[in-house]
Image (tube, rainbow, N blue to C red; front, top):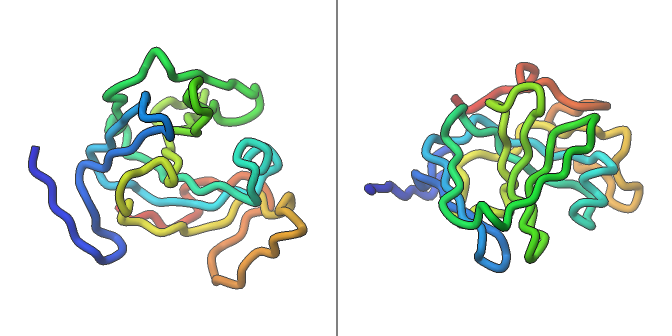
Amino acid sequence: MESSLTTSAGEGVSPLTGGCMCGKIKFEVTEPLLGAAYCHCKRCQRRTGTAFSVTGLTQPGSFRLTAGEETLRLYEPGDGWNKSFCSNCGSQIYTVNPENPDLLAVRLGALDQDPGVRPGAHQFVDYAAPWDPLPDDGLPRFSERLDWTQVELDS
């Protein structure tokens, strides 16, 4: 499998690879990510133990587990995207829209390389941690969940 590596934002390694902290789960993303966003919701704060999470939206059909499917667990909150994580080490791997499984976003921290995209928006800013002020970075801010059609995608 041939891959190209560049250092500028917007370009990167293809395919992207990633995995969990303990190494049991591995995955690849065979097409460039469409975009990325910061999430400041309380669920992400509790899930990560930090002020926010960062995810990258995949192109439909481009995400594939390459190892560890038996270790992958799913949390279905019922009022949001389903969260997939490693049952051995707890690493967050990806999230998927339960109403449209083509909408799958990988946790950028689970990637092995520069994803080639930069976050383009902040969502759930009404719930942002008071101890970590939102940066004045010029990115669009959404009080609640963003609609990916409202942000500029890299496709």
